[in-house]
Image 1 (cartoon, rainbow, N blue to C red):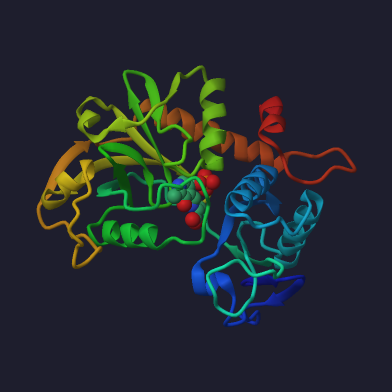
Image 2 (image 1 turned 45 degrees about the vertical axis):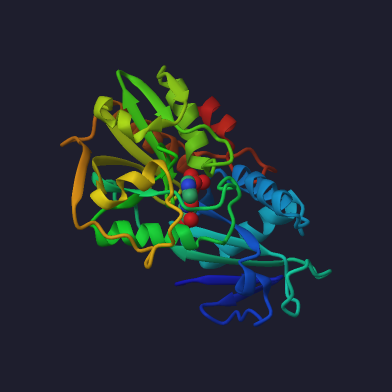
Amino acid sequence: MPMVGYLNGEYTADGLAQVPIDERGHQFGDGVYEVIRVYSGRLFLLDEHLQRLQRSLSAIGIENPHSLDEWREIVNEGVRRSMEPEAQVYLQVTRGVAVRAHLFPSTSPSVSMTVRPVRAPDVSPGALMCLPDERWANAYVKTINLLPNVIAKEAAHRANAIDALLVRNGMMREGSSTNMWFVRQGKIYTAPANRYILNGITRQFVLKLASQQGLTVCEQALSFNELSDIDEVFLTSTTQEIRPVERIFADETQMASLTHLPDDAPSSLLYRCDKPVELWNRTAPGPVTTLLQKAYSQAVENFRSYQEPLGTDNSLSVQDQNSKA
Ligand code: PDD
C-alpha cells in the first residue's frame, strides 16, 4: 500500500483525508509533530517519540488528546494497515478547527498521521553549508512551523550541501532537520539539549551507544571558529540515521551573520553561496563515525529480530535495546 492516512479516528487510503480550511495547523502552524521510523514492521523508539510529543504539546498548551496506550494503538494500527515493513510515520497534533482568530479556541485538538514506505537512507558523506540560525528561540519544541528550516534546507541544497549547519551567535547548534556531532582528539561534541536545539530521539540513542562504546561525549556547543581542530563531523536523525560529513563551507557574505544577525531585513532569505569559504573538510568517514554507524546498524538489526515477551507492546525502549546489546 503506498500510503495510509489517519485523521481524527478515521484511517484513509492515499490522499482521501481532507483537512478543513479553518484548521489551525493550516492557518497558524499551530501544532507539533513527530517522525518515527518503522523497521521490519516495528516502530523504533516509539515511546521516546511519544514522550517528546507530550513535551512539545505541554510547551505550547495543547492538551494531549490521547493516553500513551491509545497513541501506541493508533500508530501501530496505521503501520499494520500500511503493510509496509520499512516505513516512516508522520504524526501531527494541532490545536484543532476554529474560525480564524489568534486567541486559543475551545476546540479539541486534531490528530493526523501518514505512514509511507521509505528506503534505507543515503549514508554517503556530504557537505554542510553554514547558515545563520534564524529560528525562534524555542527550537526544542517540535513545532510544525518549519519555515526557517525549509528555507535553510533549500538554500543548502541549491549550494550542493546535504543540510544547513545552523549557527547562532557563532555557536554551531544543529542542522535544519538533523543534530550535529563533532569529534576532536577522540572526544565527541554535540550541542546541549537546551532551548536552541531539537533534542533528537536519534541523538539520545546515539549518546547511549557512544557511552556503551566507551566514547567520551561532551554536550557542549562549539564555535564555527573551532572547526580547524575538528577531526570528524557527522549528523543524525530518525530518517538519516548517522551520516558522515566531508566538507563544511559558508558564503563569504554570510560570515558576519553567523556571529551576529544584522538588523537590516534581507531581500531574500534563500541565501546563495556565490563565494564559498571552505571551513573544514575530510575525505573519508573517520573511525568514531564508522564505529557509531556500526553500533547503530547493529542496534537496528537487534531491534528487527527482537522477540518481545507475550503481552507487551512492540516498541523497544533504549533500555531494552541496551540490555539486549
Ligand atoms: N527532523 N533537529 C531538527 C531541527 C529536526 O527537525 C530533527 C528531525 C532532528 C533529529 O531528530 P530525531 O533524531 O528525533 O529525528 C534534529 C525530522 C526527521 C523531520 O522533520 O523530518
